[in-house]
Length: 80
Image (cartoon, rainbow, N blue to C red; front, top):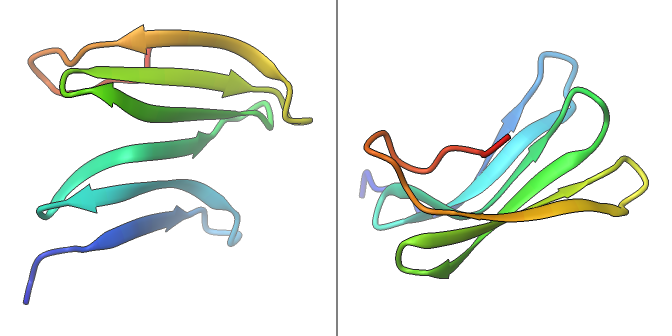
């Protein structure tokens, strides 16, 4: 009864959404979306057990770039 299920949303002090992500068996999981300082977003989805596809969008929703990533010792980190 104390395990998080579904999506968790994190908000800024002004009420804007900062990020959201899913939970699987109580752990943070994908999909994961974060709003960036420039007004764009980064969105990550799991492709395989150990691979995530990150897609960056500008504030109009146009795709800027895509990159796959695998976890490091500290877990999944948003690539630059």
